[in-house]
Length: 114
Image (cartoon, one colour):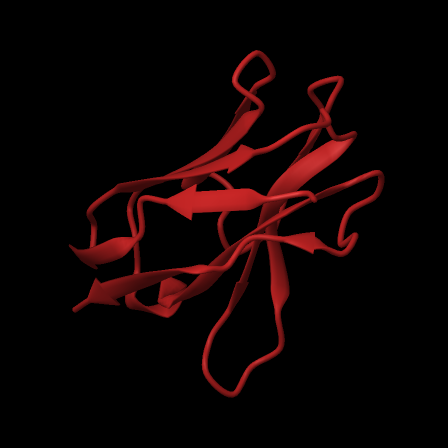
């Protein structure tokens, strides 16, 4: 049913930028956003945006990452700048009526080299 297709991950040098995209099929969701999980660590919220435009960011990324949504395209983006090695993780797109709801993308690897 619901499909979230991510793109934009890759390898980047510290200080560089990447733009992640997540295209959703079907419904427009109340909240869409991004989580990440590094090896051996718990999944954590990175950034989410509600349909009305409000946003929440993890303290570790605030000021460096920007989330945006294009409702017409049913797509959410994550612009990541000033990337640090500690940002290395698998990034997962999430969507649903509430944050953390069980609609997830397949994950896209982001690796930041030092």
